[in-house]
Length: 120
Image (cartoon, rainbow, N blue to C red; front, side, top):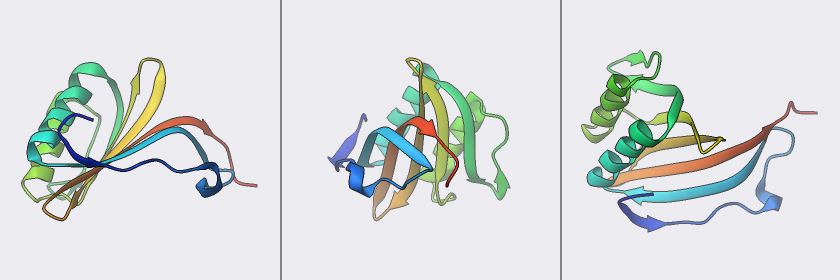
C-alpha cells in the first residue's frame, strides 16, 4: 500500500476461521493522512468499487462512487468516521480494504477474498 509507515504480516492457516472466509492474501499497514489520500486515489482510479460501508455524516454510505469515496476519505481524515470498508475488484480478484483510525494515524487491512462458504 502506498504511504505506509509500517507493515505487519498476514495470518497463517491455523489462524483462519473455519467455514466462513478463506483469504489468499492479507496485508496490514499503518498510514498517515497522506497515505490515506493515496490509498483512496488508487481505489478510485485502479479498481472497480463494488461496495462502500461506514458511517459518513451519520448515514450509511450508499452506492459507491467517486463522490462517496471522497466523502469517506474526508470523514476519516477529519475524524468524523470510525472506519470505512471498501469492497472492490482488481485484476479479476475480489478484495476488501478496511481503513480505521489508529493512534495518531490510520490502520488499513487489505484482504483478497478467494472463497466464501457457509458455516457447518
